[in-house]
Length: 276
Image 1 (cartoon, one colour):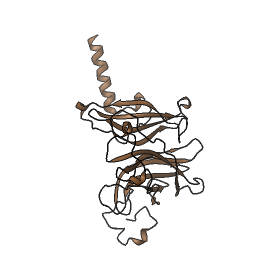
Image 2 (cartoon, rainbow, N blue to C red):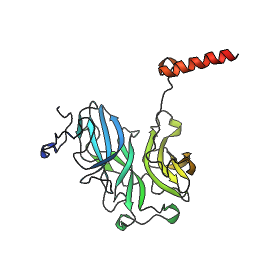
Image 3 (cartoon, one colour):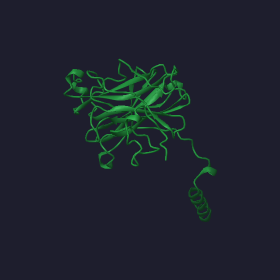
Image 4 (cartoon, rainbow, N blue to C red):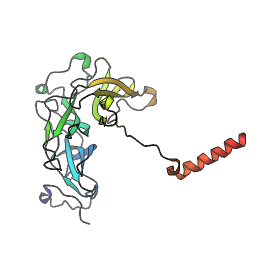
């Protein structure tokens, strides 16, 4: 079977058609892969990004954002990495998960959690104690922009902003993590609300939580609006809720309900009439 996707360096891999390589699932040429990040449909092209560690078969720091594009969700082309760590910066030791969005001016953006290890002193000072989560790494929320997005619809080039979206987690909340920004939706549907992002988090000794931030602009001005919901220790739902996501679902009409649901509902009606 012919592999339906290609990559710039495929010729260098003699064994690329080996049977154990996926045919329809997006995968890097080699190395570690985890979370899918920022699926995006922009001007007729599909994009998927993913957590990737080249040259390793297991998770570690220094993660990059892999990138692949498609016209039909079947034939994929691997692109150069969309985001890579910048030494001496807040993402010195990795570019963790996040999402994709299109800014109000039509520019595609990627939001991600930048990570630097506590020992990476060249990457900047430690946060003030009231904002220090005492983790082995320090998290910052960042944004990158597609360079000349209308020149090449595959969006091969991305440019980091010099200014983080959010430099520090909220003070004094005893958070167990602060990562994976997710844009709930552009302000088209609710212009009066502006932009909203979720950030995965958790409260030590309590449970997971999702922080909600709001801003009138995608690139700056973010303010904590509160918590979407919180877990309890006894629920056993985990210490940190990573990669939060909200989807807008339309309610199903009665005639589009699953067959079993309709039958059950009908039985209940009969039961109800019987009692009256």
